Length: 386
Image (cartoon, rainbow, N blue to C red; front, side):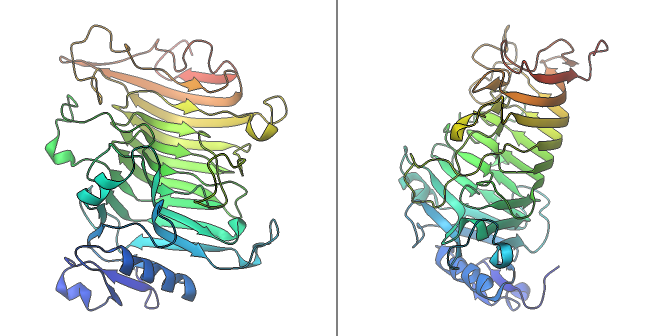
């Protein structure tokens, strides 16, 4: 529901009967400058920025950093830790929940601009920045992002420079699913390993960090989950290098801070997930290094709880398209820890395996690679002995 005081944006192809409700009309060739002004104005007024149905093409870097596109900027003076009286969420949302990859408010990148990005430096399509890390939070919902490829290290939603994020009802893809054989993965390229659909926050959040009803396909990492007190529900990752990763990145105060800057924030508090779909991804989940920032597992063990993870791990995924291959595990990995034995918690899962003739439950297939996950209680829900 659109509030009458919200900032409303229309795309060049937004239906004419809707455009009359918009206060900002984005250019067909490059929506970024207008969209940035609309987001800044929404932040000044402390309201939401709402995108009407249409296609918003990004064809330039942002003014605040060449490493990013759309910036949610906090101009407030630096705050003391936990000085939350001036904390704010920046809200960007589509006018309605999308029904598919190409429906609703669709943000894309121009192919020439996308191809011009560096191969070795990440580019954050949406990110936050400003004077106070602890005053920044993101709420992004009801959006579709459709990139023209998967060969660049693009991070679509980058929460590393915020204290809290909420992602809800967002769809992100690096290819048009209508032009691919999803059963065999033919034509779906192996994505750049540093490309990310959704990335978590820097931690030390002032409210909640929630990810709900989101889907991603065709990235090096689909969901790069991290932050403090994280709750995830109904997330679907398809045709990625790795569908889910936990605590596998370093948070920073600013997008332009040196990459070797000591990490800020770490999800030493519980991560809880319900109903995760990991389908046609090359590798099973990754669990990051729980000992960075000088912490050790003995003092600050990382905890994970996953209720109901469905791994549809067939022969076919990006780079592996032979449905009759005798060993579908060749070149692929079960779940791994960056520091074996450092994680704690409970994971309940099932694994489905499809072949040309039928499908079956893999009741005896381990979740972790040998030597990993030794301190995590793992339960295969299809194994009657569990």
